[in-house]
Length: 450
Image (cartoon, rainbow, N blue to C red):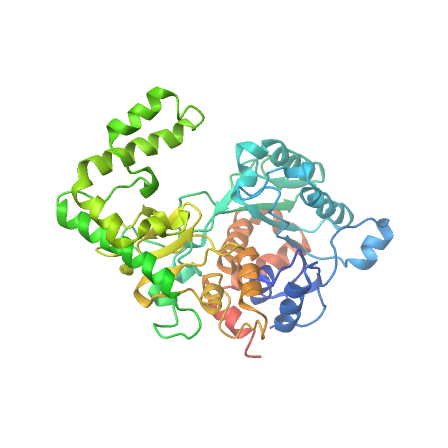
């Protein structure tokens, strides 16, 4: 394939942007990734130039241009931790949050035709309105058309024919086109919106089993203790269904440690004993007290026979989100600090760079690294060599989804077609986008068969 456009890959990770853009006909001219393990995986799969290094650009203009060649597309999944709900959310007050300005330095020196930046959903939330305003304003000052409304998409919003995957992973994409002549509107619509579906009909439903390796995969089985915890809670589910056949299982978090009669709980509240407990927790304590009061005659024996009181604190909690499924062993499950969460086997929650790996109830094992890679759009030929699984899970949790990049890039170029067609660089990009199929899966797999 003759390269149609060039691109730079900043904060490259293991190459989610690389997979999509190279499969579309792009040629990598520069990549950088500060994490040594991720850089090693990147180089193993994509070859040179090696991406190991730091994006921080403290040199003068001439040195920036020497280090980073001119390119048509700038891709960057800049660090999400300063904006993530799982972090302190200090935004640009934190050193890593200021790395956007390193990207901006490159933009000012080269003015790539298209910018394709990615971050967590929370970047566009109310907590970071100031940071979002800075990003939009500074890009517009550099002559870019960029929407003030974030483009938000998740792989599960894309149909399989468009490279979608059964994973809820909402991410913000900042897409911009260099438009110094102001051909486009000053504030265009975003190229994607949350909860909008692309390539799916109203009856479509994901089936996670279509992306799994099968039942028997060595090394990922649950431990005897984990099986005991699930069995105990599954027994509770069966008892609830037996004794309350006309009722749905509770949708609120079930906390064994809060099981007492409503009379006893109200006495604690009236005495002031719970004055330091936040209102949201009191609300759930009341719901659990009502649940226990109405079902004490069978819940009390279950507590004794199940041994639940001896479980770790987070295993004495259940979050049932599995609708009308009959058993926990039919569900996707997660051992979370907030409890054992169960949901239907349709799509998994976002893969994250911490140990909350999905459990496939039917197979009584965890999601494997290869399956996690599939859910991020990487083909089975993608190699992690012999590195520990923990590193692979972390890298995949930090990766950008290939199908999301492919579709966002295509939708952005279609929206800004009038601007792109006015420049040689833009026409190169459009030629590649127009020739690309709906899904990246075939072209990405082809990158590994050359």
